[in-house]
Image (cartoon, rainbow, N blue to C red; front, side, top):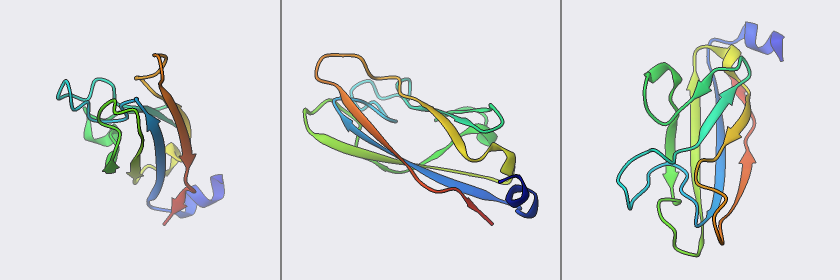
Length: 113
């Protein structure tokens, strides 16, 4: 992995968050990102939904915006020229622990370019 990082100028990885009554990114009811997932890169940097653009991820699809009682999914992409931040090593959901809340995560492969 270290050798791939050294040979690469950019890397990316997708995370798919499957949700039932759990907000992953935009909280439609509150109109903010306070319940957005936090992710951690392999160099321990925390990557957030908003803030310093060097440490933020983008969202390709956001199907987890409100508590509907149905399953949805949100696809997050993190892309960086700092290859030491990849792969993603930890995910922290903020909107969990309530009644009838469930989630699952698919971690996509890291792609070094």
